[in-house]
Image (cartoon, rainbow, N blue to C red; front, side, top):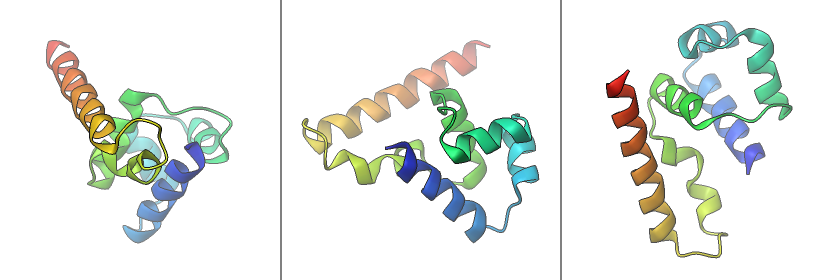
Length: 96
């Protein structure tokens, strides 16, 4: 799954003509960390995925939609879970 997420991130960065430096600064991660994400050496946590989605102008679910159809559970259930997680993240961020 991570490969498709990284491909989508790379595609959006290229499409929107953002550099890795801009990307790094916008999501608050160092260049080495960004490089590790792009190589698949490090996993992207859910909070960082939200920052990435915000920077790239998409919803977090965008990065997972392609993979949802291959999951054992129905697509609607997984989409609902993603929505619930996004709501929880918003609540946590509002508490900070």
